[in-house]
Length: 422
Image 1 (cartoon, rainbow, N blue to C red):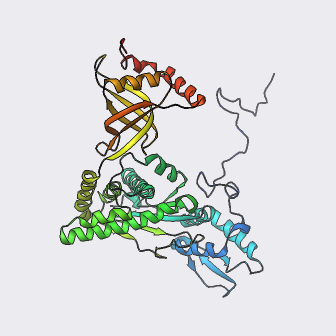
Image 2: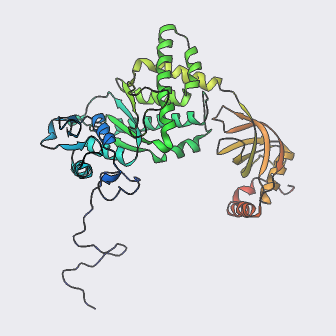
Image 3: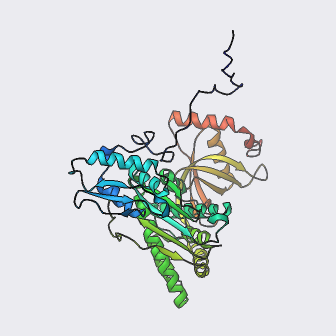
């Protein structure tokens, strides 16, 4: 067999090259659903011209006139706008509405302005926008260093997680509680960076994350008021009341991470124009600002929340995933994968000799156990104290088979779990 001389042979383990195939850049990040993702521009039939106009205004585009009541002309922000402009109809009653929208969306997709991409994301996924800015020294050509950008992203994620935790319930300190559910809510959040790396925008989908945006909005204002009260009076009482608004140790730690190493930081929330303003919130909230002078109050509040959060009485059902004790008899420690009874993935508990034996036998036959105790705040609500009333729990055959399979795959740690007399 012969290969044409103009066709290169593929390397082992690699797919053959496709002639003239070049990647096509898309204006949307990974995860934006159809029908717009992949086509390059949204479908004009699905775009509300009022929403498009509101997003353009939010992202700094300037209205340059147009026919009153029919359409408006918009130009991008910044000195490099050139001759780019968009004609956006005022409503769908305009005769050429879809044609104008199609041309405007195509121009946005081709625009080099960073704000154009953010407008398209806002159209693709109706989202509340949360923006962070950090006042940090500028690097060469105005760009922020890798470390500075990582600090901003990490702090922003911590703040979103604190808001998601507050949606699950009010607490001064969550530790490991509710963390899996809160992280799951944030999976649909999209992120865009501002030029220079000194700002960040999170697009929080309205259908899954509006409660997070609202709770974070209230919590930030409550934290700002509590800090002002503490700095004016020296009292920490305002932080106790702020827990009801969503302030927690997780939020204060996130704010410390955001402000530390910067001259100041701001956070602003902008509501999705397609979903409207949430009840009890301002239509255009002012940015909330924090400075290095707020750090002592934030650190003191975080320590107070950690110290004062009480332990929680629980009755936990879980599967034994690890057992350990120093000898063949006496009390021992077990680690449970929680199935019900506590909003944490795993807990550890010290059991007396009889309860330890019950837990080992239950695991050997593929059954979870139920145990009563107190979930301690120390260590992040990962330890169960005063554990008593350990009993096996019956499960259906499918679940039991799955537990038995897990046992056979992890027999090594049971060499230290049970002695010959057990």
